[in-house]
Length: 266
Image (cartoon, rainbow, N blue to C red; front, side, top):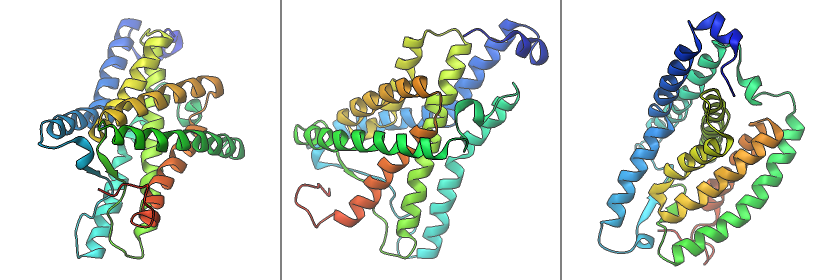
């Protein structure tokens, strides 16, 4: 969509300046958040494919201990990591405020909690069941590392931290990769298809550390989430769905690892 005349007149000298500012702003936001994660994941993937042995014999560990044997220090690091990862979301909301917009314009608010919860739960159930089968198949074919969703010590704060980590991932990814990015790309004149592809490829890119399966699986999820966002006009249900998916992965792994035969543990 074009840059609004009122926004240009009230905030920027002209439409060309607005587009340049939006472009640079978007690049900076991504460089500070999930764009940088995509580059990091690519480097990690190159390291994995050039290491002797197959991908499935290597592990991609998430939510690992930051201070083994020192639970209180470990907890401090975990909470710091979760809070600092949400700073780009605060930055995005601040930038949107310049154009008299905010989380409400992205559907990131509490106006429709039960609708968002219901839709998110349904999406999570569908994506989760397909995702588990896809992951196991990709790993079995050698296209994916063994994903270890958590490796925290058995302490009292383990499960609360896993839940907080899941919600943090959901808020960061859906607000930036769906709500914010699609808004900015539209303002920059990108076609709906190009914006969909950009958002989906970005989502796949920062999961590449998990392997080829992680990239394509999350790319497909990205396509679905963009389509749902355009249909519902809200990132709220996507945040709920993503939270449920990650809580299921993190907490489910903690409860089932070593207790069932079908779940790889690295």
